[in-house]
Length: 271
Image (tube, rainbow, N blue to C red; front, side):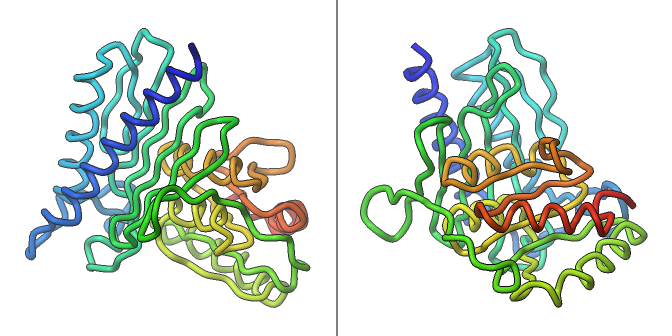
């Protein structure tokens, strides 16, 4: 019964992510403007974020009216079915606003507070990543069929390629830059894509050795965290904790723990 439910949730999440991704890719107006701001004047929402979330919640609620929602752009409903959808309709909004290709639609289905299904669609890459708890992580793209995902074998930390992100509040961003500056000499290099969901999937794909960021919300990592874990990565927050606004870390085994320790020592978790 649970396997059948999870398969139904996966197929619905895939359909919703595909349709929202097509809307965002094909419907982006040439004169796209900021609809409102959030934590700071540079933390923006566009009309397309709002339209994509309406498409996703409308499709899902039409099929499963008793489910709950937690969406970045305001979707909130407790639900009665025990299933809650955690939605980021456009992860990488500033990239999207500027016409940069790294953005994604992220949809997770939770059961009893745990992600059981995760789908991340990256339309400008032509790739979609998905996972069901206990069934591995997979991607579809230019190749034929589904491709299983697996994180990279762990290199020494000084050969690890690590991604991060920065907050839109200037004071927080300044501290994050200090932490990144201390890390850079200890790693192969640091990358910053602008999309947490894509970074987590890149850990799953073996394109990154690790990723960390402070200040993420549940919708930023709910799907990507499951995909990374199902691909063999370790994920967490501060040592012993789950991913949270204080800190989110994902990495191949062998890189995750030393990176997490450094982040704790460097105070990556506080403003």
